[in-house]
Length: 245
Image (cartoon, rainbow, N blue to C red; front, side, top):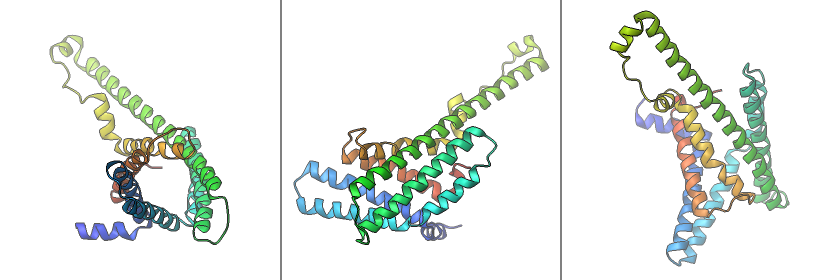
């Protein structure tokens, strides 16, 4: 597939457009915060803040109805054999579905169809978002520990096999070929896990900031959002990097 075809395919995906809008949304946040710090230009700052707001509203429209898809996905993960994966993935998807459901309500309020306390609903939505990310990070930690454990088991088994085959004396004379450092080997063999972990580490600060659990500047929020959005775009562009299930 040539580059143009890949771009068209990416742009045809609702998920791809959402990730691009997210990148621009958080990039805009970085932009107006930087301008606010470097020079006094209220007019430009207001335009960028308005753009950020409208991009956020557009993203909510793109995701409208997605809460049902996520909930259906949660029902499928209930049949996973691994209890740790079953619990973390299913609960994460349920929280994501509730987060998106409230996000739909907030979008309806933004376009003037209903009248609600948007600040309250926004914070409630952020609670489900934060819980989802924490559960995803728990799953990431479990996957990383499993990957390290499996690699250590393979290396120990290989050492024992060489010792049994060649004998201790010959093994000491002809040492085993140098192995790739453990961490680099695990990362290389489990790119989806580490990409997903990096995305979640960047994302978790965003709902925590909304809820007031941490105090980070809009510029930092924007940078974290840009980082996680770039990872999400990479994974959407190359599905082999997506963490499954």
